[in-house]
Image (cartoon, rainbow, N blue to C red; front, side, top):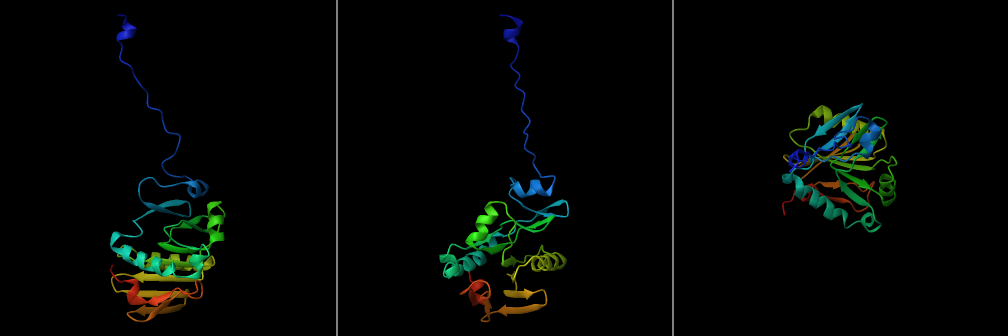
Amino acid sequence: MTAAASAPLIIKKRRSSARKFPRSFAEYLDWQSKDGYSYEWENGKLLKIDPIIYPKQLHIVDNLTRLFTTTNAYRKGDSLMPELRMQTVDNRARVPDISYWTLQQRREHAANRRTISQFIIEIISENDTAYEVDFKMDEYFSVGVRLVWHVFPESKKVFIFSSPFDIQVCQDNIICSAEEVIEGFSMPAKDIFKLP
């Protein structure tokens, strides 16, 4: 046996050419997280955010989704989407908990064209700071969002904003309505929080 034949075989690992994290906003727009977290982009920084919808909040998403499936918007092909990335301003993108997208907007989004949801639902958790919640809401309205709901699971309240200054608070039997954006999308607040 020759020395060459008895030498161990060494296999070099090939380095992946794909970066784990994007370094620019353009890279971010085409990037998909592989670590199970969602990320937002704000002014040149990649921001890791906690899981947006926690398992204990899934019944809220289910109740809202079931209501949406009864609307004409759903029958036309529109969607209520959880955690869909949305570019808000030139150097910023957000991942709302739930957002409403028309069929045409979904097509534009799939083609990487900037489009803005008209209706955003944020489920507010104990990890959200008042500053972050308020900042995002102002940002949403500044780019053309027409309606924002802040859903508070612990107090079972829904704050409905039709502008940063126009607020309706729903609780118990008070009707929460998004009819100005989605015809037929309204229900008593207590039904949003109903457990299965």
